[in-house]
Every structure is written in structure tokens, then in C-alpha cells.
Amino acid sequence: MRERIPAAYLTHEAWLAEHRFYVDERVIVPRSFIAELLPEQLSPWVESPDEVTRALDLCTGSGCLGILAALAFPNATIDAVDLSRDALDVAARNVADYGLQARIELIESDLFTALQGRRYDLIISNPPYVNAESVAALPAEYQAEPALALGSGADGLDATRVILDKAKSHLNPGGLLVVEIGHNRDVLEAAYPALPFTWLETESGDQFVFMLRQEDLPDAA
Ligand SMILES: C[S@@+](CC[C@H](N)C(=O)[O-])C[C@H]1O[C@@H](n2cnc3c(N)ncnc32)[C@H](O)[C@@H]1O
Image (cartoon, rainbow, N blue to C red):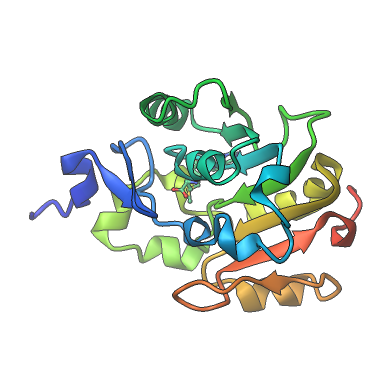
């Protein structure tokens, strides 16, 4: 109790969208808003879940969102990417627990770096997005989580900027990019005033997850 270790690290389980995932200190405890959106909330843009055949979970951590995507889109094969080898080891355990080894490929990569030439119908990402000031003030429970999973530069948008810069060339025509950004909506919209973000409704509000279509994304620099 005094050490304020997240309960999920003691029980080695966490629940997301009514699904159980193995967790330990190598991964952040699953709590992404994107879980709420798969697949129903994407239905205005994805006519049928059957039509998604290639998807990417960028920054997969425990593999939770990649696994939920595989369950939501039954015809899809999924690439699940993380920079942390430790996180990918946890993801491998979860992928095996769900019997999804044939449909989910785990890839060690710095964002899109190892994905040259790969294109997807859907990219989902819950990247690190905590700004430097908030990282410095994190309560002990969050400090127990991997630092790589939380902080992302001075304004929390370092990873999101790379995703926005590179996603277009990794999406098929008509493809969708869905990214969680925490409390950074105002900062993000100020940084990209020309981008027509669609803010997806979650139980906690509509400022945490944006969606952009392939054709609305900037061309790679
Ligand atoms: C906020 S956690 C999300 C994990 C998981 N998707 C979830 O929702 O629980 C962010 C993840 O991004 C990974 N990460 C951080 N920087 C990365 C990078 N440059 N390339 C790929 N993955 C990265 C971290 O290791 C961490 O697992």
C-alpha cells in the first residue's frame, strides 16, 4: 500500500472493454478511450467491420488495442508496434492468450520506421502524450509505469507530430487514422489549424481522441 504500486501490477490483470489482459511493470495499465470506439463508433466511416482487412496498432504496449481491433474486425490482420522489447514480450503473451498469433504481427519499431511500404485501412494509436510539466508532477502510481509510455516532449505531442507527418503514406485511400491525445486538444488544434480533426465521442467527452481520413492528412515532409 505504502509503495502505491498499481493494483494491476499485483494481480497481473487489467480489464478493458470487458476483456482481460495480462499486465506487469513492463507495460502501462490499459485504459485507452479507443477501446470504447471499436467498432461501433467508427461505423459512420467504416461501413462494415468486415471491410477492414489491414490495421495497425501503433504504440501497442500490452497489445490490448491490437487485440480489440482483431476482435472487432474479423477479416483484419493487424501489425502491433512498440519501441519497447519488454512491452512486446507482454503483448506476445496476450496475443497468445487470445489465440491471435496468426492475425497479429508484433513489430519492434520507432513509430513507422520499420514499416516501410506497409499500408493499412485503419491506424489506431494511443501514443505517449503527457507533457513535461505533468510528467514532473505525476503521482506515485503513474511513476510505477514505464516512462516511455507516458512522456512525449515539452507539450506532450512529440509522438503525435510524427504520426501526423507520416500516417498518410501508410494508409490506403479512404483509410482512417485514430489517435488518443489526452488533454492536448487545444494545443494540437493550435499547432495544426488546417487539419479537419473529427473528435470522437467517448464516455468522458469528445476531446481525447481524434480521427482523420487519409486524404485530409498532410503529405509526408
Ligand atoms: C500510452 S502507452 C499505450 C499502450 C497501449 N496501446 C494501451 O493503450 O494501453 C504508449 C506505448 O507507446 C510505446 N512507445 C513510446 N514511444 C514509442 C515509439 N517512438 N515508437 C513506438 N512505440 C513507442 C511505449 O513503449 C508504450 O507501450
